[in-house]
Length: 412
Ligand SMILES: [Zn+2]
Image (tube, rainbow, N blue to C red; front, top):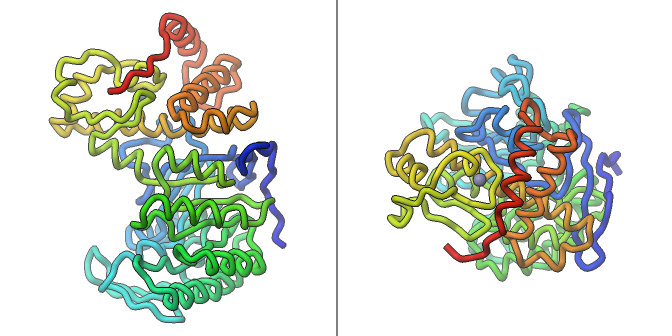
């Protein structure tokens, strides 16, 4: 079994939730964690400095996109993804499998690998498990993923079975091809919504042995109750001592549910993409920035939020920027939505530690609030998770704000 760099700090007594620490070559991350998605080497509209300020501990890069442009050899020549992008904390790259399989008619799957045409210029490419690892080794993220097939929905049992078995063979090939000891290669469990296949997939992926395990193939169009059922069945089967990563999921509710099933790591484009579309997560519910009722609403986006956007700008101004498609709208709204997700995860960690997670599970707003209280506490004590922030001024301002402000729970 590969040496695990994961330590479980505390396990919840009511659910499968746990808090842990995962050591990587670029620092330790606290789990459960949300990883903002930086598809093409950037979390859209955010600089690394912005991300550090809102408390991001690890971000994602996308192998498929970076391979096509600028090319993994360019990134390697720059000294790897960290140097190329100026992000100094941990990074994870996916294997490119999900994007390649999403190309539909532009790709051909075989045992050896997948041939596809670039959506940019139509050029022909071939990615095999070995090639995916070679590209990810060159990119140099701290955590990399095996090349797997994510079967489309609906797929019949026999296709799902064949696909899952091919992914297992690919997992072995990836492990064999993996060269860089500074990178942790995670396995991926597939099997669609078929419990029997998920069970085999978990057992055989664990037999191959990886320092971490991901659940792939969920949130690909299935009904939510079925997704939850498959997740609740699969996650507890994963090796307990290893980190569990749920790929590409999801809403704040999905994250809380995932944590209760024992998931430690999440990624999703939802907070960033929704922000650019003017859909905002707040402690009072979801806000659609376009709504005419915000035209002369000079209150903060979320009165309970301590992010830069909510501390400085009004709904009326943000709505105006959004309707004018100003770049600043994308940036300010992205910062808020990411801060919301990161606060939620911080709140979840604290609730697990304090034994209140199962009680607070149904109350997203309360968990976010708890996360923000924790952020304020850490900032005030100087144990800052951020760099370069004027922490003491902010902390004293925030404590005044909080004392003047009762948390509101009205619907928007
Ligand atoms: Zn905010």
